[in-house]
Image 1 (cartoon, helix red, strand yellow):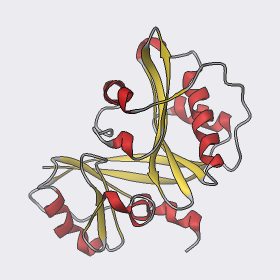
Image 2 (tube, one colour):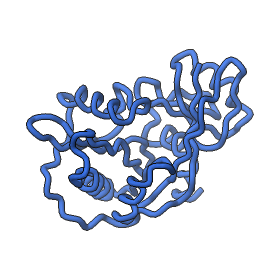
Image 3 (tube, one colour):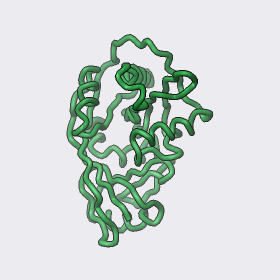
Image 4 (tube, one colour):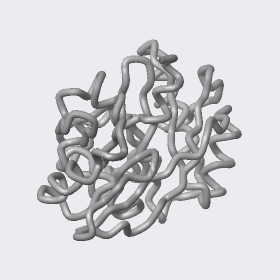
Length: 224
């Protein structure tokens, strides 16, 4: 399989490669441990029923990323979040004017609170341990972040592009995304990201930075 094709099933390949230590493995279905990330992926749709039943005992709300899974009647397919999967092939040449700080354990609680304020449901207490996260501070408060989530041998996902609602429109997301993308290239990896098809402002930003759409991909939200 070509490395780029692994992006068709990003959770599965992340948990089979760089993030294998975070996996709960049901053979043809793999999930992140729920306190790290609420995502799962599979290679055989007929096997999802049993694995999803077992995983649902650990967490009440989670996502299958990729093709539509089969789920038991005891659970509910809450929604299908359709995203664009976007890739960038070169470093971004843009001036960064703000001081960007790599976040450490002393920042993780503030990071968690900011992301849950703006994008609730995707970021867990230990998501910050999956990759490197970066932030911009104003008056000693974390007001904008971006970081790395799913990781494969050759690709790293740019994630949690978040700015506090009181600080939008200042170009922080653009600068943080640039910094994160270029840091991924410095690791000899290739960046990619997921953005909801309805988020036209973010899509326009990513296109301006050089991202192109590779495909649409669905995040199937399952609840108990």
